[in-house]
Length: 81
Image 1 (cartoon, rainbow, N blue to C red):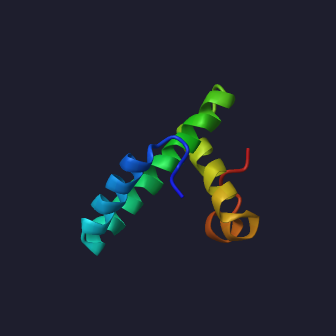
Image 2 (tube, rainbow, N blue to C red):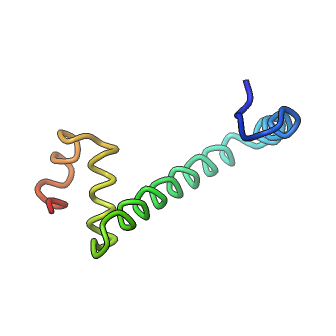
């Protein structure tokens, strides 16, 4: 099944590119994509809440990603706003 915003031919080409990558390159790419996704989420928080700092927005996103229990274990009361 290919993504709805990609043609089947383009999707097949992308899969071939991924398969040709070394495992280390695929891991680096996954990390880069994850970092970019977090930055997009942070930008979304900042757009919805003018005046919030980048750090406060970052902590809010991390709270959503990790869940309350893990976030509190890692960051304590930091990020409360």
